[in-house]
Length: 464
Image (cartoon, rainbow, N blue to C red; front, top):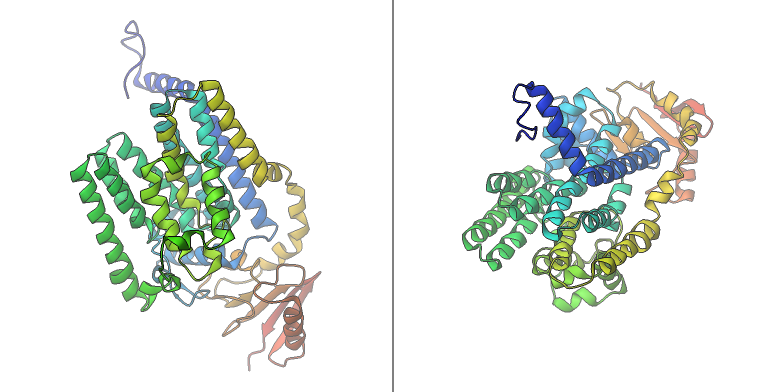
């Protein structure tokens, strides 16, 4: 780091110089530091509170908790919730790299904090692009706020944990290193992105095409080839061999027709309006969004499964870096008075993002004392040995996923215990089905009610 101390202090110790430079860096970027701390705190508290109040679920926090636990034990990531090697479902090698951290902190909360950290850190790279492009700190901080409060990120954070949500960090680093021509970091980020999820190469291809149009032909061609080749290798060579048929998973729901399929449903139109509207529709004016976001949405909208079309779950998180960067590029070109643009960004940040989603305001109203009403479950779950196979209700699964075998009730298979709570979410069962199954277990000679605490029921298999 460059020594910023005046020359009259030539003999100052290196530690003092480092502290001084760090102080100057913090002073220069205090705004984004506060934004980072704010959103990291909000994301962390929101997801931890949901988990502690048994509103996290087997799909997907339970799945990834079991997988990273298996990695941390040096075992193959065979998910008993998905009944497959998880790398055949999503190519998330990043969990293997994170497993040493999980070994030190073997709790689902570790994954939630890591996710909050990755998402919040991605905002710093968006900020640096905006600061250089817009040359205006206030506008830069506002656009970063719009990015971090984008509904695609908020719904993903609200949806427990997913690799797609984590991927916003390598994608934002990719854009940052490309923009600032940090080529070593650029190619590192390309390789790093492949470790997060198998669809990252699709964004790499789009970025490569954009680079070609920006007259970076050699770089663009290399990037496109890298993206296409890595997608083929990961999807069809690695995943397909790990789990036969995995190469067609998710893709087999796609039925390509025409571009008109982008607008043949009110849900799709609403998704388009919402995703772009949160950035004042500016990304529509950037080729970057047309080459990265639109192809990705076209694939999703061509699916026969409607849940891919909407704004829920984690499906829109990885669009955020490209929407934000596209908006930044357009903002730097249009001639709008500064005060008007700031007003527009404030409106977008408050009415469309923060207040519309109510994510932040709701999180600030969470009462940590409310978690105490679940102590009866927490205390009971502490008694189970990790070697026991367990079938549990979806909100309970993430709390018991540090084991080789855990199943989502009503799937039981070779489970030693069945653990359910009548007051928790019954997914994937209807209430009547849940009640009928519990009544059947109570009268079964195969199971004995070992413990009942309030509404929590713990059944143990009777071994002959």
